[in-house]
Length: 557
Image: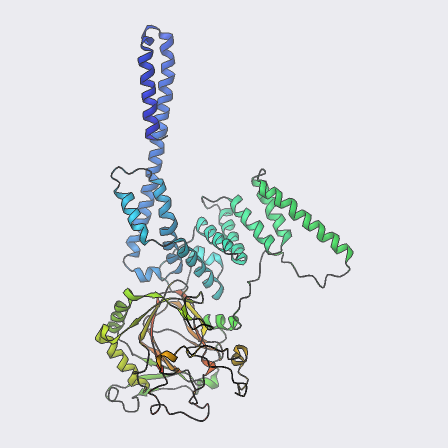
């Protein structure tokens, strides 16, 4: 009961006392007032109890969030390195704080509500919460992690442990369901049910979970399982109208199946229906998906002992470049063919922090070029934010550019600006080429290169034509952070994986000396499981390299 209701009740009672002022003349009549007052006291106590409960909830919420922010503010990047922490932060700001606002019905000073209203402009949106949930599902798939692992927060390489509640897991399942992703819906609804069966408290009920789960498994073709789950729902709530209707419909379908089986002696042409409660992950468009994700997990790497013997480390002076004569750079072979090398101690901690400081205000969602139009656009297969730094932004940018030029022996005059990228929750960039592919030449020999055959050298617009600098001849990739788990750079075509190591850089050529693209260099940035991955890269172009890396008549490095 609200304060307004109490006030109205008191006014009405006072009015009755004025009208019937002769109550004192009759004890019999006054006994009625005893019960009225008793009712009024009970109503007042109920109001106080509700207010105390409301304030208790607000106080409990404030203490929980205070504890969280005290810990997270000490090490924001480290805290958000755990993907569950990142997801729950987005969820809290998009959903939970709104619930709190509804709980705080009145604020005498209007300070809190006014502040919350102002701050909400900067809160994550529903789209952010959906994206964060999908990031967890992407990590779940790539690294083959059970939802229970996320729910318990036991992820490798993190000093923070953060768990998902029943309501969190249910929210994950709902997001998957609304996206038509029934595979993940089943996984997360089953996890929700598991936690509820284990006795964990939640605002969501088993009926709600079973309602989603039963219909989802039906959508996946498992009618027997759908019947089983629907019956379990009706045991809990026999009056559930939708469940009753669904059960009758499911039984009808089963009866039709039995009738059809009687007319058919064989079922060879029928598709098998899952009945174990485990459903296959849906296939997507990426042909090398299995290879790519295996490399991200550290599996399928083709660095055999014979190939390992071809790899060496050395001091690199860049053909006696003046910048490297007195202080040559440490160079290690990562792969033999195509040749990928790693340079050690390329960036100092001070330079890294400065570059990050310069990039943060400029970070924006990373884009890709539409293969048909050449126009930059965002895509789900590239999840990161990036910024471009000019040399006039700070002397450190010019210094790093000169260093990369000295190490590679290539000119940076025609190179692109220094690109800085930060990968957040499940941040990734699926397999792609750094160079622009040219129209297919039917006379060009592919030497059995399966990727080249698969891609058919898809015709693309010349995206670098307006630059007048030719194609991207080479990639220089700086790692500006260590990554506790995940985040490798992998090459699915030949089975290589390069792991981030702060201060180091990797380098490879995208084009053969003939100018043709090396399709083996198709690579990917694996999803970051735990950590915050920072990189910067420089793309060197063909123009200006004529005498630094002369052309050849063959595709020989």
